[in-house]
Image 1: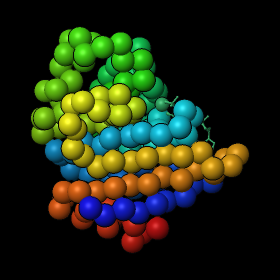
Image 2 (image 1 turned 60 degrees about the horizontal axis):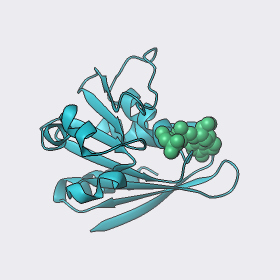
Image 3 (image 1 turned 90 degrees about the vertical axis):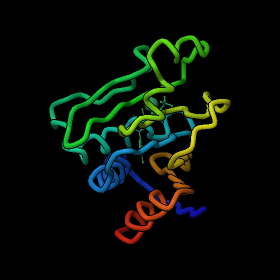
Length: 156
Ligand SMILES: Nc1ncnc2c1ncn2[C@@H]1O[C@H](COP(=O)(O)OP(=O)(O)OP(=O)(O)O)[C@@H](O)[C@H]1O
Ligand SMILES: [Mg+2]
């Protein structure tokens, strides 16, 4: 396992980190986002989408009620938010298991809400520091994720 903590002092900084990851991402990929409310998870996913060449005028917002948003880019991105997850029934209905086991690029906000699912992916944990500053800790386990993290970290 490898870990690296990034710091962001603005929404633009958080989005830029997401964009850099999106630019080097290839399927299959599973990104598991956790952390404080309002710490920047959706902001990061917006950058991720831009890094995957999702059109700049396509809004990237929290799929809290829809549970999933799909964006078309250089590679497609499937964006889940489990914050309001009412039960496993919801997830089965939208085929969550199939997405996370697929060869797609999947990003999950509030992934810890599906802790029982034994998801294995690149873990990205957001914490509020003070005012606009956030820490973003990335933990990689698989060889592919470790290589991604190393590329992301060197360019910092
Ligand atoms: N360094 C920063 N990085 C990201 N967002 C920041 C930062 N500083 C301030 N913000 C503000 O914090 C908010 C982050 O909201 P965002 O929706 O991305 O958080 P979230 O983690 O997805 O929240 P939720 O848990 O509700 O899904 C935005 O309004 C953004 O402008
Ligand atoms: Mg969010």
